Length: 133
Image 1 (tube, rainbow, N blue to C red):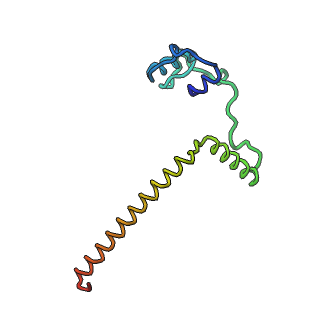
Image 2: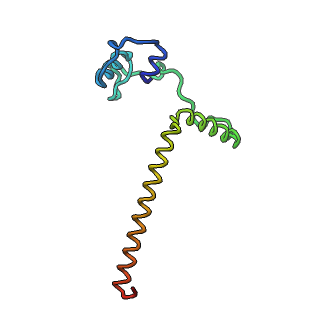
Image 3: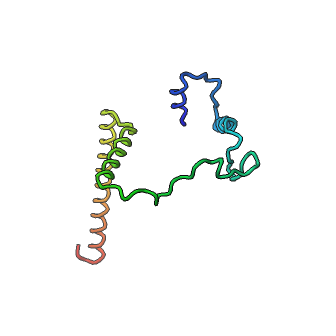
């Protein structure tokens, strides 16, 4: 969970309690984990192996689904996901959009002039080399 979301959910927090470095954040996260949680090595931190009974029910297999999903449902889901992603976008202001557009147009103009100049230079060089110029 991001720190911003933690602040929204937990209200205003004291800055003294917030870790200032990545190492401090990792240490804080590690200390808040339950003791039975698996570490990076794949072994349980309590030393015992866990059985399937303690894990709960298994994740259902994909083969257990009923039939195929209709085309309209797929399209609807796709459009919902597109809208959700577009809500996450930070849209530029009009001023920044105009400045970015001008930068791109100037850069493209300079590159077109450069490529045209190199093309003319090579055309004259080939004409001089093969004697048709």
